[in-house]
Amino acid sequence: MLAKSGESFYDTPSKRQFTGKEMLYKRSEKINKKYDVIVIGSGLGGLTAANKLAKSGHSVLILEAHNKLGGFATWFFRKNKKHIFDVSLHGFPIGMKKTCRKYWNKEIADSIIQVKDVRFINPQYNLQTDFTKEDFSKKLVEDFKISKDKVDEFFNYLAQMNFYDDQSMTNRELFEKFFPGRNDVTRFLMEPICYANGSTLDDPAITYGIVFSNFMSKGVYTFEGGTDRLIKMMRDELLKNNVDIKMNSKVEKILIEDKKITGIITNGEPVYSDTVLTNANIQTSVLKLCDQEHFNSEFLEKTKNIRLNTSSCQVYIALKEDQSIPHIGELVFTSTKEKFDTESLLDLDITSRTYSIYYPEIRPQDEFPKTAIVSSTNARFEDWEKMSDEDYKLEKKKMIDETIDHLETLLPNIREKIDFIDAATPLTVKKYTHHPKGTSFGTKFEGLEVSMNLHKQVEGLFHAGSVGIIMSGWLGAANYGVIQANEIDSYLYNKNELGVTHARF
Image 1 (cartoon, rainbow, N blue to C red):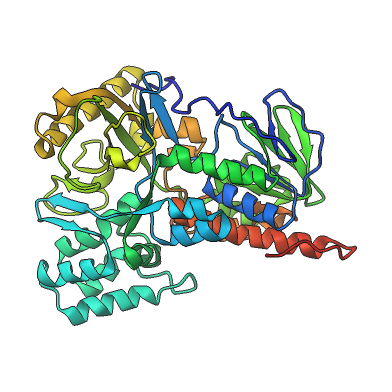
Image 2 (cartoon, rainbow, N blue to C red):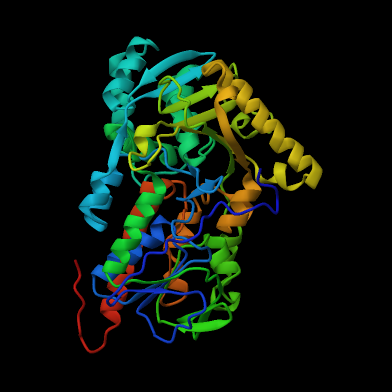
């Protein structure tokens, strides 16, 4: 098991060598080149922005603190690479397919496949769905006995939501407006989004409506071959487009003079650029990487008051090579809680678990077919942080044991089939992603305003992290990277006093 000082869930980097203009820096190499853009961190927002900017003709350097790209979109090996686990693969909306085709390449987009069997198992109902709007509507009418007119009205209301709407309505008020007194309906509609981005009933309804509408377009999708294959394909595309990359390079400081970016410090050495895109947490970016004298007091106060979203725990289970399980769904939302409430999802006394089942067909490239199961639960960082080392180890063991006990109710005798089991907590997330409080879902809604206005405080400083819930998850992160890449491209275009233009599209 991973303890507070346990081993990394990041594997060693690929040994593949590249030739040509691209540059995959070694850890010991010093960077002497000045870049148009330096990207701090390699989450999907940073990677997508870097790729788009490079294709627009800008010189781009990605600096990553760890020894592989991807941020929270990552994976790890165990038992001499006998087993591989995806940390956050299942699932994302079909929009990820369009984003990858437009801003990455066709091969990546074509590897995005639909998750067709999503299960809900709890005391209020037991249902299977393909998570499309059509099937969800049918379930609401036939299983929950909601009138078709009311269901259509609800979906139409969500479809009209946008970022500029009034933010005063909460999710709780939204569900009470359309389905008064129907806790079971709220659970059916809200539970998957809580798992996807940490939303609560008291968050602004827009943070639910936009994300839910994205999923309801065509269902839930995943990446065939796993996160490791995706990130390696993205790395190849970045290098092909002449993006330079240096891993094992944590940025210690963003350099600013006269409210303008001049570069960064990494591993004690400066690297120069007039433009920086930070993919780190927005509070970390402003309050730790920058000298605060460059920001006005109102902006700093807003940054300090941003609420971080919650974290998560995972239990990773690998089956023996000669063992298989019956098909019980690819995403299984389970709960033993009689009534649904989002606060109980965070409790140390776990009642809700979402199982991502990785059947052998999800990784057709593997030489030996294997099955993996990942149990995910939302969690509070504070609950785990306050534990002593001994209590921490005991609580992790309890979480693992109780997860297997619960899994036995879905897959009898599963305990006998397990070859390896591991677990991660909010402290694990903090250690390897550097996210404050180990947040798995970025910030609450107010983080988006601060992020989008960062360049108005310091010329040439931009942000593309997980902010405002809407911009969390794989699709949200990638699309926010595109939005910020467009901002940077316009900034660089307008900054060029000689009128030398870059390709814009």
